[in-house]
Image: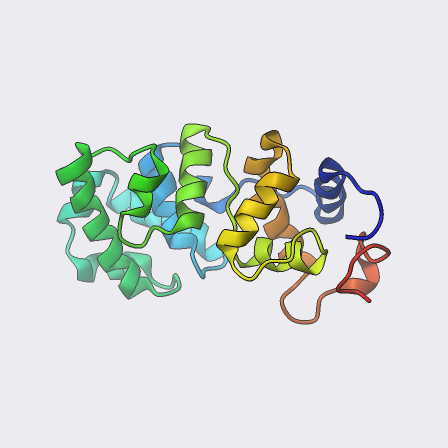
Length: 211
């Protein structure tokens, strides 16, 4: 990025541009690790409004790990609709719950590697869970964070995993956890995948992409 904007200044500009971002969609059903894990899995490739409705519906019907392990996949698919890839997520969530019972005493682990070993849980999901549920500083890198970081020239990376490592070096640890939610809202409203609103962007004077 051209210019001399501090890491904190970047997030401040984004926050001012999007207004009140609300709370991250995986937190709509509470701060329980199981609820956050379910909400984060639901949120993948799913709009926030849909994530919130579906997550609440799933957790109302399937409120605990043991319930998730026992629910028929067909029923879970119905509960997950219209979240993206709802049939696949139904299979993953059921298997995930069964593994939590067999290997983790029915508890969501706070260890990131253990989380990433679960079906349907990648680096982004694991980072979200450890940060939101357990207070461990982490950067959740989704398509918005990866795209915006590269467009602004904060990083020059080819994959979300590379982006996460680069951002951890660029941003101080205390900014890691709130970063994702602010970037996501900025990506939804301004730095969109298609037809970004560069003309009214608060970074247009410094952004490499706007050139």
